[in-house]
Image (cartoon, rainbow, N blue to C red; front, side):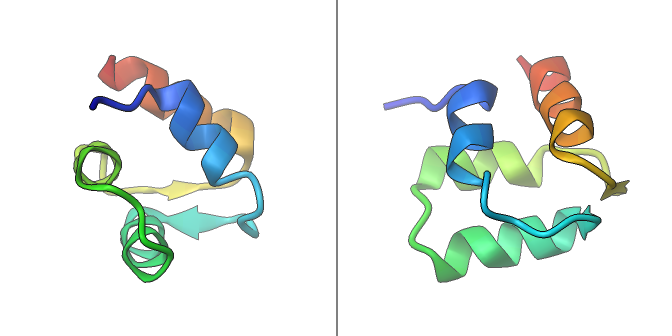
Length: 63
């Protein structure tokens, strides 16, 4: 099963921002995120995301 950036963004809706890529991956691991979703997070650029919109844009750019 694959996961889209939009689906992942909905799953991550409860995060506090700003958040780094490393924090996103760690949060996903701690909360049982599936392999496909973790791979998508790991593919993000190494930067900090200041808002859900900014994270969503980075996720859409991956797809």
